[in-house]
Image (cartoon, rainbow, N blue to C red; front, top):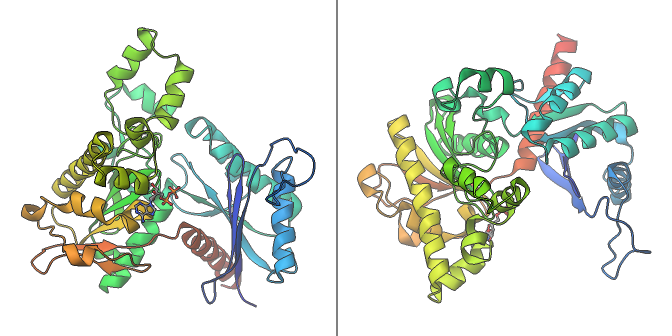
Length: 398
Ligand code: ADP
């Protein structure tokens, strides 16, 4: 029987799903259920969209759609359901089969990811309830970064804040980084454990990672996904004194600040738009705000590349991934230009491509390879879920 794995990304108002046949690594069905928890205004609207009262209804609908597709007639055909979980705290270094203790640990990490972990866990609990016979596997965005050493993950605060409150750098986008690092190593024909990379995940959220011998040793996001690079709607690194000033001077309440930092800063704050395509169009037309935003965006990335080069010494590849990393040639060019003394030289013609597979962008004289590696977080979740199950099956048989 083929190993069919369903990947679920259960968010606060949507559930994204993708069914894989992992034996041939093929996507059988994918989709998204949106508008969960929105009050239904009568029948489905003109777009044929329905709203769902809660996650239970939404996930039951996922199963109905899978059955309707003919690709999964019975939930018992599933090898596993892989769930994206944003925060695994300091506990989860890899994917795990869900049991009661895992559920409690995900719940304990709620304060660290109050917007993401609760709906992620809800997805797991609903699946356990609806299909008790199907193994559920949790795959954590933070897991890849648990290899960071204390000097990279600790903040210079009194010890108690770390010991008693878990305040430290965790980092995110770990599933994406794990995927692109493995893929880049395979592309280079090298064991991952021998590779040093700097990888840039540039989507709506954005982060950089320093990978030493295949493992994360530092990353730009922090305890929360607000830190580091400039993002679509988040400002990235900022003097914490600014936040105190805004609160103490009455300019912002904490609720205002929450909104400002998560939703109304970054590219959106600078330009009024957070879609990089639009920003590049505006910049090309000479819009001053857009030009400044592009300059700031690339400058912030460059500073991280410089820092990570200092940490790693030498790298085998600089990796670009996610929407902007994969498709925004002017951003890649601007990030790399000026890095020639560091051994990173981009070829303007190669950079003009918009590939949907791994591609090399470096100039012939570049010491370091520059790669586009399209990310696939869902496939990584499916692979990790299947690997955990394979190990369990091997354990039973051994
Ligand atoms: P998410 O973090 O939501 O998964 P994506 O990885 O899809 O985001 O990246 C979204 C970003 O990628 C948006 O800013 C979008 O403008 C940008 N993007 C996608 N295609 C292009 C393109 N051809 N040129 C420039 N930017 C692009």
